[in-house]
Length: 137
Image 1 (cartoon, rainbow, N blue to C red):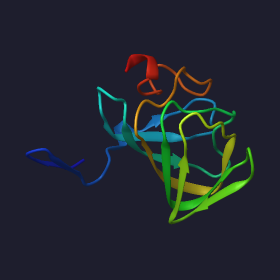
Image 2 (image 1 turned 180 degrees about the vertical axis):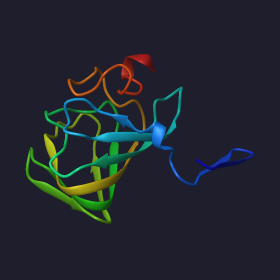
Image 3 (image 1 turned 90 degrees about the vertical axis):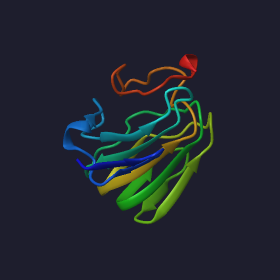
Image 4 (image 1 turned 60 degrees about the vertical axis):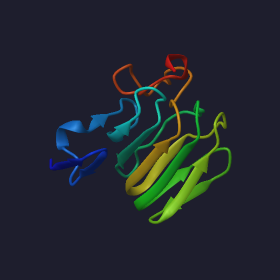
């Protein structure tokens, strides 16, 4: 990895392989957290989602979720089928139930939260993978 930091700016040239974290029970979804605010839980991550993998259950977030599909095709199966393809942007408002999801083809997604991810740990996360919970804010 090559990080360049000047004053408050940081440039990550290539996210290090050892920073990828596998989410259990997702069929292979991996997360690489690029930034997390320790006070608010706001974060920016890359998601590597192999074809057929995805989030297995309906769930909601404790903050707004923003997804940008860098490459691939990704489907939100409920409440209505919604498909993201390369260069697609998706916003999921705080508290809105969605999922399950699946990758129709290999995907690379940029995921941004403007606060903590969840109110409680969903079944496909562990304490090591979940990020900040709203009760910790």
